[in-house]
Length: 399
Image (cartoon, rainbow, N blue to C red):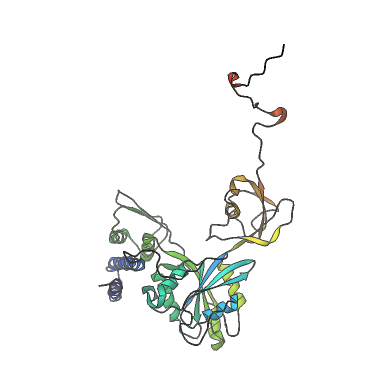
């Protein structure tokens, strides 16, 4: 029996098992088994060498956005409208067969937009090049899930479940669970709050399913069984996702209003070019890019070419800003002058741990190189050798 058949068999067993106090331990074990099998499904086959088959797209710009959706929902048209890059669009499905990149120039930054082939139900198991598409989405900063406003709401749930099956968690934060394997000592289970979904026995059973018998587990929130399994697996990626409903020109105004009020959702029409500016603004807001302008000493700030930082790519502190310019600059920094929203007054003297905000202006003051031992009459020592015997002997006086 293959891995996919095993997963289907366990899912069928979970579907026919009643959920109550008596079966929660059994269901927890089944969830752990499914998570293990799905991890094995993502691993490359044994004996294979080199990288797997996928889309080779070089990272470019200050951020990366992936377009994911079913075939014929308007991904290629949206890429052409936002970037100017031509992507084949036609009235039949699977027009796009490979990854097509484009560049959005927005707010003095360059954002890479990737048009990926449409995925179908079962993509997490490899149907329709689904694994390659999802692998590229994992390397992105945020995901734009393109949906057809005239179709059913079930498409959103199908796409979300396909992405979650391969370890992508959309619009979620990592669970507050501390987990560490140990060599000896058994399993230590503690919590800082009341737990309603997981108890010590269930935690032990899940860890034994992973053949972990020595570990330290600390719950800092009332997390679920799925959260505990995600922490044990350790290969989950938590990403932001914006649900983009296209083709709003073919539905009524009441449906448009209902879709627009849903969380993390934007409604657009590529045919009539409606609301594209709001989509760009929402995308910029979710990416959290921070533009920092440099100011040389005694000169005006340079507003033409900002240094772009982000929390996901390194951080937004002064130290990250210095490392972005040059790795050796941090050692030479004496202090930093900051103008902008992050400073209390203009300018503010800041250290390396100061967090920068968007459109801040930074001037770096470097340490002055001092001569060793001072100079002139303040010299602390001479250049002569310390021992008298090592000093150069003067020539004898002429007689």
